[in-house]
Length: 120
Image (cartoon, rainbow, N blue to C red):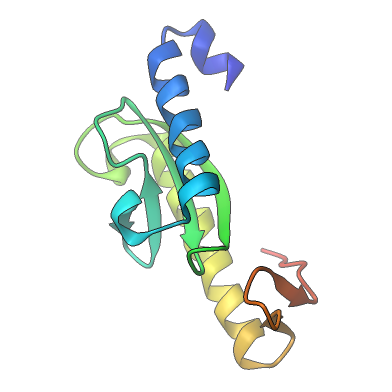
């Protein structure tokens, strides 16, 4: 995040940190996410930066990478497109491992358990 502050994205970094704080405090409710293919993006408010993630539940979010938005679509920027493709690949492997019984939700639905390493 510091590299983006140095490039003049200080307000955007603060916005992403605030977004993550909201997720921690209020739960990862759908209204805090923007659907992007089979994964999610944030923050939903205007920001020149985008971060990609997998929203498993209101209690579990897997944060990935992101970058500077260069246009309306993730494909418009090399950083955002790379980060989105990576999260889509992680999501695909995660779903496969859940279906195979290698990963599962804890009884209290607060975490994922099992073989959590996902090789891409």
